[in-house]
Amino acid sequence: MAATEDGARTQYLSFSLRGTEYAVGILKVKEILQHEQTTRVPSTPKSVRGVINLRGQVVPVVDLAAKFGLGETATTRLTCILIVEAQVEGTPTVVGVLADSVQEVIELGNDDIEPTPAFGTQVKVDFLLGVGKMGKRFVLLLDLDRVISADEREFAREVATGGVPEEAPAPEASAGPAARA
Image (cartoon, rainbow, N blue to C red):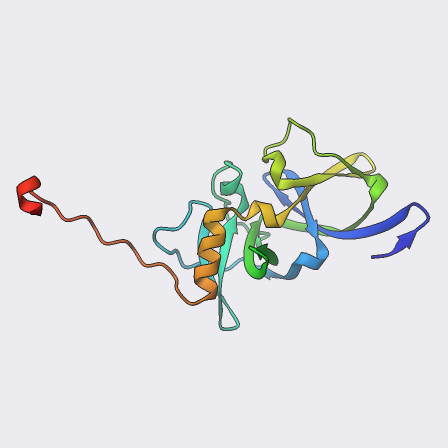
């Protein structure tokens, strides 16, 4: 961060997702990985693509496109995984976030950020901190702590404690109420 005459400025990492530019606070980003295959885990939320091994740590990977109702992210040579730290019930939790591509580090002051519009975005208003103005461009500023939903937080917590959920057993077939007795 750098202070200027018009107030404090904050750095964000911008990335694209389905042709829209988003950004997250740079201090939330731990690293950027080239896309790698995730291991799918049964019975996880639709937006969780799976898990990856990050230097011995199991990290869940969230597909923001799926989260925002845009379908799964199609993998290209530019697709990457942002390793971010989100607050899960007050506890810092490492999560991977899929992005179509990383754009740049941007710096915005308070005067550069407009309130979240009530309509016109593909993202729930609750997920946004505001809209950053960069000349004629706009970038949607994501609130990662809110984007990671309760289901994903529960999955991340289970992964962090080593309890990756297993596939639920198939229901037993029965001939009727008498067979269950």
